[in-house]
Length: 397
Image (cartoon, rainbow, N blue to C red; front, side, top):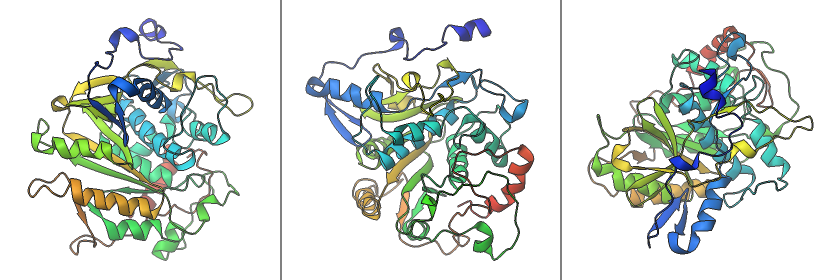
């Protein structure tokens, strides 16, 4: 196995022989809310795609949990796709959707802070270590394959510890997005989970303290909205295709998580009836932080044309992602959904409702347990992580 993996060491792009260039047509390509005409905008299109953070399998990182795997090859693809979707949200949050990466060009400090969140170290807030260990609370053993909904739940929980990015992560339930709940969550004043429940229980200092109070600012909390869906039984139902493609046109789009059984991709757009995706199935060697805190980022960007697949080959289990930095972005998203998604009278892809359904349990905005962190500190052990899980359970909506 080592000899097989070694040929990918320090690989910085997907191998060209596995890539298919975009055809010379008059068609348009949609990438995360941006439209490109192939005949005139191909260079801009490829520049936009290369700016997306590309997370792949890695090897030779520190063993997960101290004694677990030191590579996620063969099982971590959906976790990597979740990282890519979240990274796109953070880029929109700090740098803007139109920010572009250029090779060997000096990047702003916010970019390096974003990238540091995903380095394969146990003390980085969205590392493979943190995601795999948080998956235990979702019934997934370390080294077990995740589905789109599991990754969404894991990201929601990890975001509670991330004060720098200060995201409100909403994962829809029963194919339904509730406007009232989202606004309650995004405008909710910061509080600990024990305060939310009227409890005085404390877990001590499982995570290192942090004096950054960015997570305690008033106002609208930037929203990461994730919508896990089942678009068919064994295959995607063709009735959903147009609505699915419309989601990539929305300016709030973060793409979709999905792929094929046990084979996850990060979908970022479409061309005709083909989906465009970034593929995590390349094993690269672990890249650590430099002494100055920056990251050698050459292997974190795919610098060639991405893969494409027929939309009808998509597994029906997916998760859509959207980012709304301000309330007006969310209001605009709701309007677009009403116009483009809910126009279908039957078999809608998902529902958007104003009020919390009366038959659902009461909505409690997610709040972190009484520990503080910069979002880049270690949940020290599985024992502590499971100890915190009781606090998380009331947040699952």
